[in-house]
Length: 107
Image 1 (tube, rainbow, N blue to C red):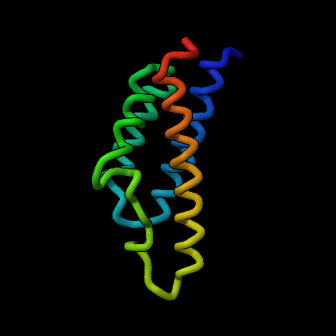
Image 2: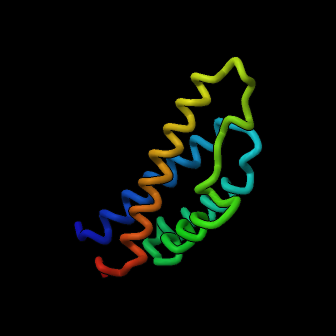
């Protein structure tokens, strides 16, 4: 398996996990749409999938800024903290994989 293929596989796993996480909480319809759309291109091993993921990062009010605590009650703080830790880990994995693909060093 090539490095590029492996990177697309890693990106696909991270995007799928992120979609699963976002489905657990309410109010994240926009990001679900964005990542489901990107996933189609990622599954086809198209550069557009990686660039779609990257377009969700950076700037104000982007996926980089998303915190899930807004969707939960105060008495669920440990659950919220765990969700946000998972989100942070997945966000980093997605960004790094997408960046490696988009940099075209693997092409």
